[in-house]
Length: 191
Length: 191
DNA sequence: CCTGTTCGTTCACCCAGGTTAATAAATTAC
DNA sequence: GTAATTTATTAACCTGGGTGAACGAACAGG
Image (cartoon, rainbow over all chains, first blue to last red):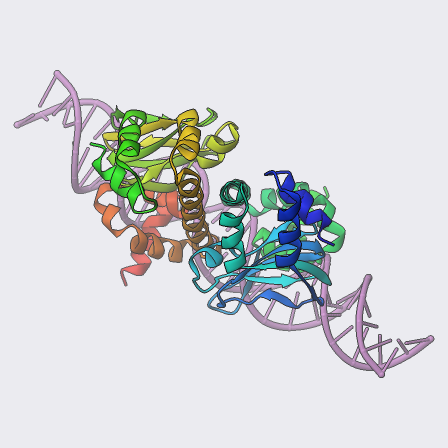
């Protein structure tokens, strides 16, 4: 169960055998049914997770009640609202499991201990944050500079493997248009 | 000259007197004329900077030659294309000084030494990255979920102090519309 | 002080996405 | 296996931003 997580951490820093045991102890497996929330909008994100199995989406609700999907994460990726987690502010984003999922969960306090307790803990914290940062910027800038049609093309490119697992309305929500409009885009492109 | 920088670092980690001297040595002041580039699009960002004085904007060029302004930073803030800096990839974003500016510059290698050489160097690296991350996410999500009119309102709110220093076309570029459209928005709002 | 340039606004026309509603297709429930 | 629900597509009409051009205002250079 924890094997994939330890592989993931070991790819970034050196982890001793005792440290591996500590990790197995502090990352608690939790299971979620389809449509369950790992984190609800407005709550403080007090835990970080490693997805052992499943698929989550990040949701922002607009004032008018509309939902916007801003990202997806699947098995072997980390999940967390980092902004909320780091400064203990209410999360602007919900994290919803859109497939039955198993997530290895570590509390904020235990993660802080991770940073100080493991020999290369601080370095891991820096690297993981740098990675998230780069990933976020890249995603966001392509979304930001492009029109819906190009965003859809880039979505296809970036999330090919997720395509068969995602309903159309999550895709349109991610592309930033309504379902009828995504239909029109698909029609245009098919010519 | 380095005082503001050292204050900024000291607000995050403890810095000894020797470490302060090291900082003064490694952060080199450089001056820029209006419209000079701190970093050109496509180049690898090999330096990070602390703006002692001035104002920069972050520019992305689209394929059609259009420019998009995605952020501003002013005196007492850090400037860098972190994504490019961290993984030495060509920067998708240019950094242009839109006022005469003085920037304290540290090289990538010296910053890595900073992380290992200073007692709390790794912690600083983690904190500064976490800060950038949170800041970026917040900005981006408001831009992402809102229509141009609301984006303009939020721009007014977030950058009030910069308003008198920014021409209209950088604002429209930031809001994501063309100048005529920003005019219409301003007109609508004035009623 | 005048001149040439840059900048901001306005106009008319066009187009892509929003909205609402109807229908068809695919899932799910029983 | 059929009924009920959810999901995807299409159509008609509406709206807000893009485009190109014109105009006036502000500004810089000589």
